[in-house]
Image (cartoon, rainbow, N blue to C red; front, side):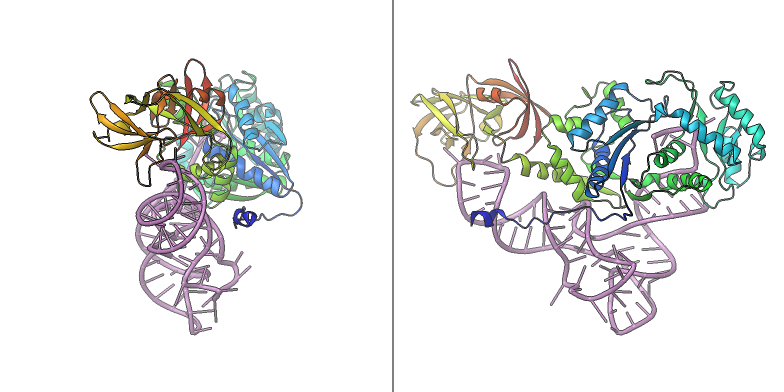
Length: 484
RNA sequence: GCUCCGGUAGUGUAGUCCGGCCAAUCAUUCCGGCCUUUCGAGCCGAAGACUCGGGUUCGAAUCCCGACCGGAGCACCA
């Protein structure tokens, strides 16, 4: 019978089936210019989940081909790997684009020889002008030999930034302006954190990704719909080289209610300006911040999988993620008292006693014991609601009646559990431990039970306050707030 | 301006390809109630949607056309 009660019909939400021929190889391709955000997490989880569903492979590829505008961070490579693993999405293989630049050069040369790419010396604005009126620039008609020479000169460092690019020849009269003769390589004279100044000619995403997806044998790509046109550009290369493009699907933009812009570059700016302490500041939507707050990997997974993959732009609330997390964390989290902005309460005639409060309300897991001798701390928020004469119960302790407010005083009125409806508030011992809770909406300082010290790294519930993760235990305890 | 894509309850989703089983699914949120020594969990209940207008059809959320709204691309960013 109990079994039956537990056997709730939770229809497991699964991702829609993929169009699969044989094996499945999928990848994510982040730029390691910061740690993964919750947006990256979607890519990690959905792609990995599909690979898992079909016993396929999951590849992590770092698209770190812009040493200037989106300069990679050396630490971030590890962060991505760490966060993938933490979310249960350990890649079967890790590839770093900046290790493989020579391969891209080889394909570039091949395309030049085929007459499918040319070195263009137009300024950006001049090319755009011509492109917009569907006109070829003079360099488009250069012979293969000329192009090879110019390409060699580019690689040889003869030109400065912006002086030359390699373009893929598509269809200059294509009805979609986004597809006309796009840039495959440009010159960037800036050190790369991994390979230094070994290269000055760097591929653009469209080229690098096109080549890599083929080399890695990617069968399915799922990514943001902002890359839909990118796919159309890349298909020109696939056609020229006789390759088969992976099957693709896309998701729309995702916004999270209550969180502003959270692109990696925005966050980086915030950290540089001192608005955020670090990449795992509890206010940030990075995976590491969520982890620090006690959001479980499984909750993020469930959240992402239930969200599915649709091209509609969505705005979702963190509450949904929190709800997922609460389901996981509620049974395992021990309960403790924590009182923020404490108010001292003296209780007259109270017997010295040891409060025995269960560690969990529904699961028998023992008690914590707190010695109380006529004085406790209560939350200022609760104190503010009191009036002289009020009878209330201190949770797991005894009943009191408020005598006065100015010096906050009460008298002991008995141990009997009050009947329904009586106000019950929590409290903390006067000799408790100092606790600081870092929450997205600010810092809460107060006092908690000493036993909290034994919960380092665990998620606990501060009763009537919320779930927190105990982050450090020294003279004071620091906790990160997860959610109510 | 030119291309492309999308619009199901507050939010996210199922259904749309192959019209009828959809007086539309599930989750979350919100609102009641029960339970509870937490404002947590659990239980019960309720509310809440096919963007609009035409067309095809016996029948349309599902097909067609148009409008409106939203998004993306047109970078020497990813």
